[in-house]
Structures are given as structure tokens and as C-alpha cells.
Length: 135
Image 1 (cartoon, rainbow, N blue to C red):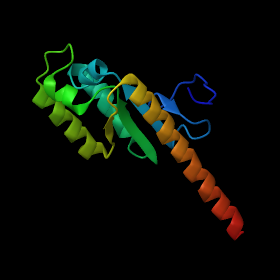
Image 2: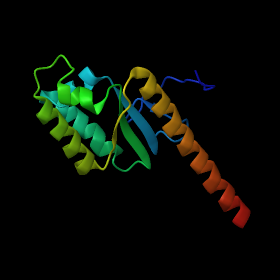
Image 3: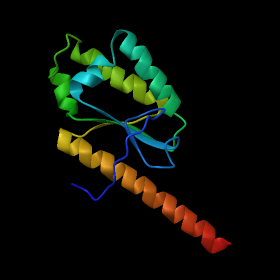
């Protein structure tokens, strides 16, 4: 939908980033079932390690292709208690200072990924321009 070039590459954390900023900005996009799966068993440990790596990034967010109400209703295939899932979101947000954005749908998540990375790039350009203008 947007005028972007896509490159496939391995990232230290996240699913999407910007060339040259892979260690400073990334977005992790999750379906609701995938997110809930990250809260259980060894997946939880792996997910926490990824969040710990991303903690130092200037921009990192988990963008979910569902609504927060969907979590509360248990609109996923796991048997995880919805309250436990909501508490995991809160705990990880606070522990790692990484926002979880519930975008409502896949399209909403795509938009948020594009928008967040675009705004990050815009801010970097502004900083660079300001730095060049002062020199």
C-alpha cells in the first residue's frame, strides 16, 4: 500500500526495521495467537530475551493484529486465561519499557508498522539536518 522498498534480512530483534538502523529501531508484529503463544512455556523465555535485547533501542514496539478487547474476551486458540494474558502484556510493558500497540486488525498493524518506522526516519532526518545547520 505504501511506497516502500522491502529487503529481507535477519534482525537481532523485531520483524521490521530501517536499513542502517537495525540496531536502533524495530517493530515486532504479532497475530493474537502468536502473541499469546509468546506468553507460555519456552516461547515466553525466547520472547523475553528478544524484548531484553530491544530495550536499548530508540524505537521498539510490539504491534498486535487484534484489539485489547479481543485479548480480554479470549479470542485466541490457546487455553491461556485472558486475565493472565492481559497481566503478561502489562508486565512486559513495564519490565522492558516496550509498548504493546493493539492495532485492531492486520491492516491496522501494517499501518502502525509503516507509520512508526516512517516517523522514526523523519525524526532522524530532522536531527541530522539540525546538526548540519549548527556546523
